[in-house]
Amino acid sequence: MEVKNRIYNNTLYILLSGELDEHSAYNTRIKLDEIFEEKGFKQIIIDLSELDFMDSTGIGVLIGRYKKMKHKNIPIFICNPSTHAEKIFKMTGLYEIMPKII
Amino acid sequence: MKNLKNEMTLTFKAISINESFARACIAAFCIQSEPSLEEITDIKTAISEAVTNCVVHAYPQKIGEVKIHVQLYDDSVVIWISDSGIGIDNIEKAREPFYTTKPEQERSGMGFTVMESFMDYTDVIKNEDRGITVKLEKYFKTKKSFAVGGLNA
Image (cartoon, rainbow over all chains, first blue to last red; front, top):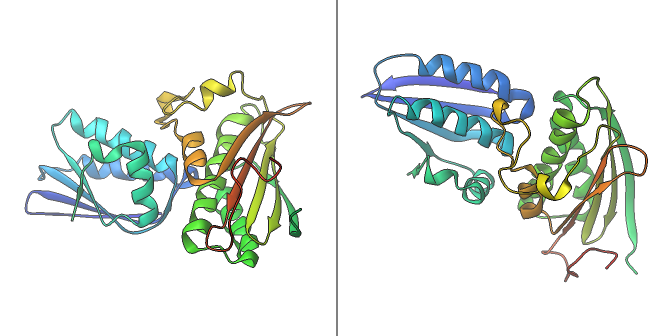
């Protein structure tokens, strides 16, 4: 799992590439938390266009990041989920706290 | 009576790196019956959830084993994922959405819910000796009509 990021126009863009499961969750969590410590953004957009697979472990990772950013009043949005990820997000209600943007 | 097309058994250590291997292996095996891409993805996800449960919960004191047995039919697949670990005290509780015994680890508690949503039939059985077996069934709807409630119903 690779995590890329850049800040542009007060927005932190995150690109997740690879598979988000139990094996990659720990390092993904650490990497995202490091990136979220940076300054200069008021919202976060997580791009899932290069996420080949995720299961409910990934949901746990995303919810954990949401809780941390909620304390800082920084909203997180999702974009470009696969059909498969979309199915999991709708089932778990994740879009209610991390809306999808087009 | 359905004709068994193929059958396999896979055993591996209950460590997280093997989750991807299990997904790919079972998916590759199921390809013989020509499921749709969506059906294969559903199976991979359910496998991932069941194996993750074994990795995270079954063996707190050691590295144990996961055993996956697959029976493949022309229009369906039956998969058993077994461990010989500590078991589950309250299976009904464990299957509730968002229930987890490890909230401090940021676990969503949605493993069984995902399995139930992505597969056509899910059962969780306490093994006679030790551990748990999760039984999953998926009907390849693009192939033929299917019966609801399990192949053995």
